[in-house]
Amino acid sequence: MDKKKLSVLCIDDEEMIRFTVGDYLEDSGYTVLMAENGKTGLEIFREKKPDVVLVDLMMPEVNGFEVVSAVKQESPQTPIIVISGTGIIQDVIEANRRGAWDYLTKPIQSLAVLQHVVEKSLEKAALIRENEAYKKSLEEKVRKRTLALEKINTQLREILWETVNALSVMTDKRDPYTSGHQKRVSVLALAIAAEMGFSEDRMEAIKVASLLHDIGKIYVPAEFLSKPTRLEPEEMQVIRKHSFMGYDILINIAFPWPIAEIVYQHHERIDGSGYPRGLKGDDILLEAKIIAIADVVEAMSSHRPYRPSLDIGYAISEIESKKGKIYCPDCADAFLRIICKDINKIKTLLKTS
Image (cartoon, rainbow, N blue to C red; front, top):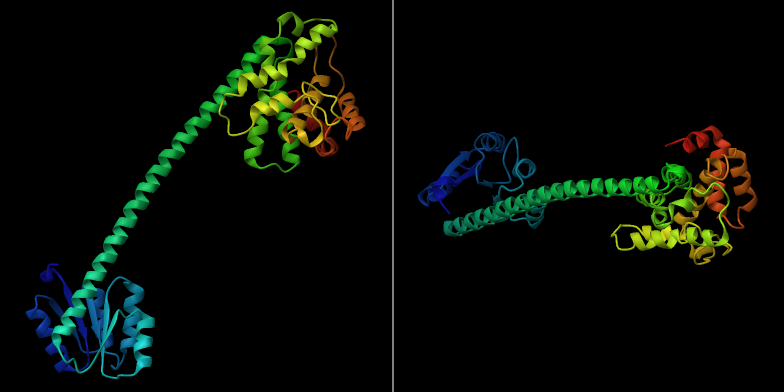
């Protein structure tokens, strides 16, 4: 520790104490500043910023307790050593409570003790500063790494959505007669999920799964998808495999949500009449139940090769009549609430391309 660069402020209304302490510390290599009262001491402290403050308690104008409080508030890391002749334990406690680092009683029997206390206080202050600097350095590193991770996460999320949209478009290309179906189902499913109070994260799961719910149709023969008449039973069996094929395509993609399973379940019904596994009730994910309703409403309201589009009233009647039977009642109620609020909103959503 280079004492020539360190300064000590001695505040004491007793001139003999000031000069005795000051001369000793100067001989020890410190720069010493002196003040005859608390008011002047604070002025010097604010102007010179000493490394350590020695202060008496009983002084005119501004007493030592007030000096300790002011220094502690303005510079918490500056060591404050009280030198007092009161000898009252309550004064020691109060000085420490206000922020004093140490307490010496007058008369000082050995100035070497004072020097030792000053040196230890300065060493402690240096360690505190080093720790603070280290802490700030760590915080800055954490901040930079956090920003870097946020940037990477943003890029990964952008890649995720680009990939999802590309896969969804690929399905549309495969089945041009229902082009835009997955997007319209996604918009409607999101509206239902929002009505049900889903979290932002869960809404993202709904969006991804609904945009990809028919991806398995890329394995279905094109002539089945565009057939202008009703499908034969064996053709329907092939069509129904698209749920599993979608699951098989998506299962190895590390989505942060169970997208593959939601896609697998979107044709299940709560009474077990759905496919491909005949799941019932709570065995079906809520996201899949929402997409099931959105899928049916969109399909009935859109043109198909084997029939023209139906009025939205048919879809509403379908959901109302089978609510609690094959469709989740909570999901159905959310859909019907949207209808009651503004049926034109649903019509607009179903026109989304």
